[in-house]
Image (cartoon, rainbow, N blue to C red; front, top):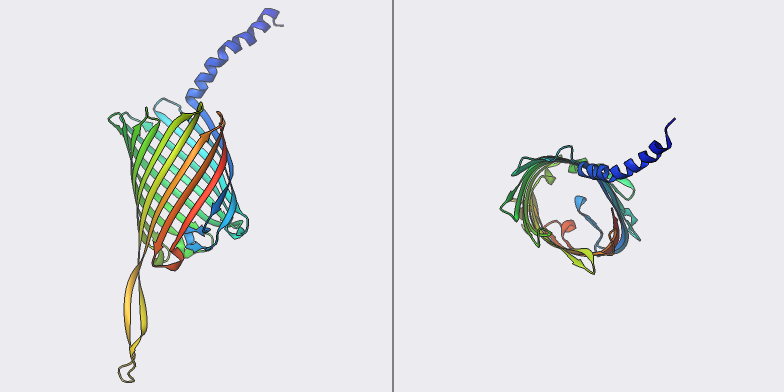
Length: 322
């Protein structure tokens, strides 16, 4: 039987040790999560992956929930595991309703001054409540701080797209990226310059293409009313050229029973261009809650009619983070 002093001393000792134990746990493991819900207006509901544009506007309820676990077995080793579920429910065009399940894993080691890492992402997307697309991306990356305020990150990726109803669009993709971060405001804010290149080999030759993407983003964090705020302004340009040459013929120029119809023929390759501008402002309401209005505008041009359109999306979400 334990003595009364010992019974009383044990909770006291645990109470004194708990702050130290909690600090040690936070140094080696951390769990983050978020919940978001909101509303958005889309001027032209579209599924980019299959060149489907409704040419109709609609409103949607949007949601996003995620968990992220960060493990640090040793100081230079970082392991991050994550899962998120996001989606939208349209008021009228429910055939465009979408859910995206995303699993991610990342392992990196800081060799100082160089960090080397590898990552893997898997997403499963449903469209109109039916399976639509499975996407996998594996990559390795190399990052280094240059001076005090510039961070360079280079990566190569191997990707795979598998469509549920369109085997012709299934594709293997090889890609590379280079990002430059220019920090300011005591490293709370940064300017990002990014460049991506992809080579996509699809099951059907008609969908083989090369992609070049340029990204620019300004992320500025500041305090307003005693709460943290984040403003983001982004722009990107995409240039996608397809391999297959198409031949088109005009009406006959001359009808001759001996020589046959003489027609004017022309050849062309599919070429898509996209210019997108995005802006958002996360307004801190408390340590947990924030409100985020956002807007984006995209100009998509192509010599394929279904991929030639403009699109504006504006919305607002309430976020809880922990």
